[in-house]
Structure formats: C-alpha cells, structure tokens
Image 1 (cartoon, rainbow, N blue to C red):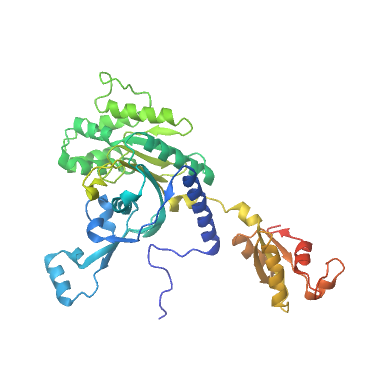
Image 2 (image 1 turned 180 degrees about the horizontal axis):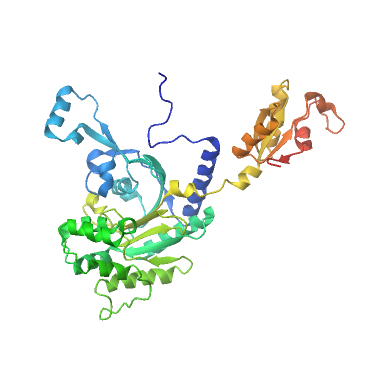
Length: 437
C-alpha cells in the first residue's frame, strides 16, 4: 500500500496562487500596522513547557503540542505513566499563541525597549484542535500589542490600527464588539456567583450565541449555581446598547457604571469605527483584566479576531505588574474572504514560446521584461493553449504574449543589434493580451 502523501491532519499545503494571496494579505497587514507606529519582533516557535502551562493561556494550554526531552529512557516513560504526569516527559512545547511568548520576550528585553512598547508579531502557532472548517492545528496569527500604557490610549491605538488594516484589505461591513471584564464580574456578582466558579461561569456565558439562553441557564445550574432570574437578565442585556445611563443610581444592577463610562469614552475617541457594546462578550482567555473586543462581520457567525487588556500577565515573569493590551486578527478566516491581488496579476505576464526556441534568447527577453518591473513566466506552447492559459490565470497571471521565433529577431519591425538578437527590442514589440479574454 502506498504511503499517505497528505499533510498532517489539521495542517495544509498552499498552492502558488494561495500562497500569493496569503503573502499579499500579510504584506498589507504588516504595512498597515507599521504605519501606526508598531515595531515587528520575532520569537522562537518553542517555549519552555513550564511557561506554556503556567496558567497564562487558559484552555489553550490543554491544546499545546509538547516536545519530548532528548535521551529519555524506558524507566523515565514508565515513571511518568505511573505518576500520571505525562507532561514531565516534555521540557519544551510549540507556542499555542503569540501572547505568552510576547510576555516572556518583554521580560527578557525590557531594558532595551521603549517605556511604551508597541509590537507586531506575525507568525504561525500550533494547537491540537479537532480540525474543522476554519480551525486548524497550524495557523497564522497577526498580533499587535501595547505594553506599558495603562490609559485608554492603548485600546484606542489597537482598535484604530486594526480597523485600518481591515480597510486596507478591502473588508467592508466589519464592526467591533466591545465589553469589559469588570461588567462581567458585576453581572456574576448580582447572581451570587463566587470567585471559585467565575471562570467556569464565564465559559458558559461565552456559549450564549451557540446554545441560547436556556442552554446557558441549564449549564449554569449544572455548576450548582442558583439560576432564578438569570434567564430574564440575559434576555434584557442582549439588547443593551450605548443608551444605558452611566449614573450609579440609575444604572441597571448588572452594569458596572465606571467600566461602561470608559467604553463610552472609547467610542467617542473612535468615531470612524463601528463599536458595538455587547455585555455578553466574554473572550475565552482567563488572563483578560479589562476591556475586551472582537471583530464581527454581518455575513459570518464567527469572529474575525479579538483581544483585550491583560495587565496581570507580564508581572508573572517580572514580579512587578506592567499594563498590557493586544489585538489579534484571525488571519486564516480573513484570507478566505479576500480576492486575488488584481494589481499583482496585471503586472504578471506569461511568454509562450516554441519547443525549439533558444534557451539563452528566451531568458534574455525574460530579463528585459523583468527589468521593466514585470513578473514573467516562460511557458512552452501546447496544442491545448486554452487549458494552459487557464492554469496561468489561476496562478495569478494577468496577460500573455506569443514570443516570436529566433528568426523574427531580424524582422524589420525589430531593431537589430550586435549579433542580430535584440532582447530589449523584442520585449518592446510584444503584444500582450489579457488572460480570460
């Protein structure tokens, strides 16, 4: 039986036209972030296992790929199996996000970084997900973070830069749902939910759009939480917007008026961005401490990215708290919505040549066109030119031309020079036709 030639489950190969679209999108995102004053860094694909399982990554820690220690013996494996601590066999792991590596990076290089550090990280991460549409075991993340800024300036810059990147990609109709963990804490407090059940309760509320109010109430009840009145509150807050009062005396009992006032100030500072207040927005990561946000699109049931403030994370490495806030674009979901780069296709040409063409002359003409700034592919003519051109169009080329035989170099229409072969003249004389015409 032949061996499987497919990629590992949950991971993918990319054909040339797919890779081209991805690189174009990454370039747009990278340029947009850089224009807003963010600086790109790079961290290793692996971190210490203990760091990846220190409680900073929430449920994603359970999805981390472990890297086994070198030189393990049978006795080591047996001891780990007997103790039930299989993770003791690993000393490293593949990163499951870019936030934990960033926190470690900042702790390592703080002395060489500005007081307020604005970072870009664009790189692959790995999670042992159950593969499904839109979820992969290896995927690209595009993160920007602001470290060292405690004021709302961090949120404003992050949301503004991310919104600009979406606009630059040509994505229209996006909005950003926004909430604050303090509002969620107040909500849980009105239901009498203690600190020991806070995170589990939030995970359940985060499922509201999937299992509905009844499903959330049932699941909360399964945690031993008294659920009387919860359904009514969930029904009322689902329609909450920007018209709630910020007066402590008049605010709904579930609303943290101070946090809501901060969100109103953010909205006022970002008039060009559609911010939607959503008091049921949770974000699954346990490390968020304040503002949280997600990108929504009217045609999609899932978010296109998200982030929030995580002021407590970096202090775990430094021993002193450092304010931090980040926003991550869900690249794999966004790239599927993008069209091919029309400008790149317009500048990409195919030269069709005969089988007996002189290779040196072919390359000379090609180099002349490359010198004009074009992307050039040499392709031998076949009987089925239609299929050949269709393939080139799929690969991102926009036009084609028939390269004349070598004898055509002496044609009166081509300016001869030197040995009678003028590559630059031939390049100028070519008649390009659009693919698909």
